Image 1 (cartoon, one colour):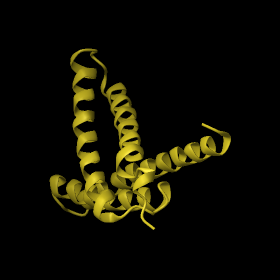
Image 2 (cartoon, helix red, strand yellow):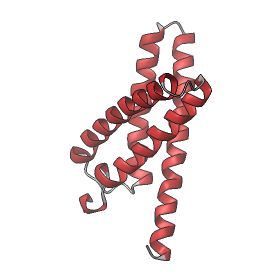
Image 3 (tube, helix red, strand yellow):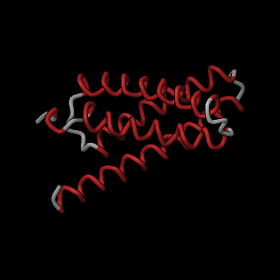
Length: 135
């Protein structure tokens, strides 16, 4: 990878991380606010997750991956990617606790990094792949 390509890849990764951190913080605030406002925890968390999912998809598509991927192809792939990452996070959590006896904080760190890395790789190589750009 040459200099400009390396800088582009590093900038894309940085934008991906910024969006991911922002999405996590927004989910935290929205779920807290909705449940504090009286919604049942399940409903409040699901609503918060759905809102953040749409925001994260929009930001990843438009900012991280430069918004040149058609929604008809990118959105279903993003949805599948997030479902795969959720299952992967669950499996990593199970292994971390069951096999390695990791405490909750360590488990959370492991699954956050593992799911984030998987999401970035799948987003880069499949969801928002460069050869799938639309004019």
